[in-house]
Length: 323
Image 1 (cartoon, one colour):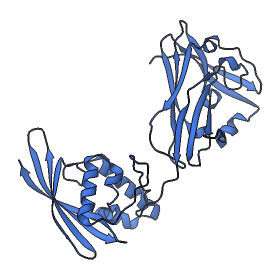
Image 2 (cartoon, one colour; image 1 turned 45 degrees about the vertical axis):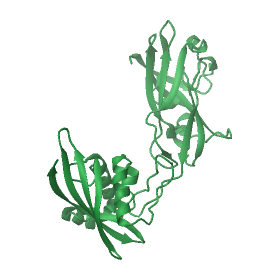
Image 3 (cartoon, one colour; image 1 turned 180 degrees about the horizontal axis):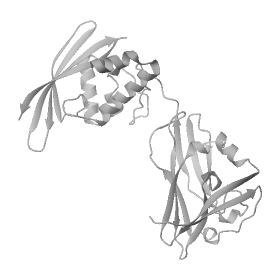
Image 4 (cartoon, one colour; image 1 turned 90 degrees about the vertical axis):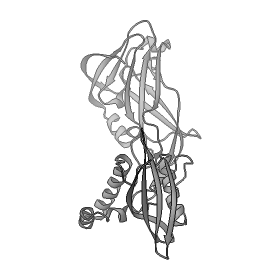
């Protein structure tokens, strides 16, 4: 992707300023498209909803437009419910656009024939997305800035379907419960026996279903197995402990070092299960295939019963050689 930026300008504008029509856009020779930059599950109160904006020039001549440093003066998003009710503008957007006289800094962008220009915007900067539901998103680009009345030059995008889920539910360890990516439902711990808990966890890991893998792990208890982390845990506030658990989850899902609980086995066999009214253990033979050999390890998972739910609180590993 190539782009040419010509000059830096400062424009003092007031409401109702007129700008010339962009002939190329009016003739439909310039395409405008939007898509989700990192498509995932979105929540009513959560992370940014990033939208990638792309302008493609299919005309035989250079296409030029003004791109404000404050993008709210170059682009607008229209988000509506399935019943066609528009959502309210974000508070920050309203404050920026309601000033009657202000300096707008912008650059003139030149998109050559056959080339595209893209940038990314957070949808939450434009509309209030505080309620769950299904929505339709549409965007408009104003080549001569948004206060122009030259409607003929405005570029309009196709529609995107957006689904917003209710706010995440705090789990027993203070970390929000995960959503099942396959079904979209909140994952809930069930009353499984210790061996079924371990089988559920290992199967989830083999399928890279991290939300299921963590479901029966008591991360607080697992953190306490390390003396240094236990001392840090005891010294932390409630908020600090939540951050520790979240960091631990991140470490397990990204730092799958040989011998840790989060390494995915190519095959496994539950060999022995023992438990009483409060504690249990499950011994599993796990195999890990490498390029020229297969490693064999015996994992023993230690579980504890709390509120009628068995969870994994620790584990040990014994190397059994290769085959």
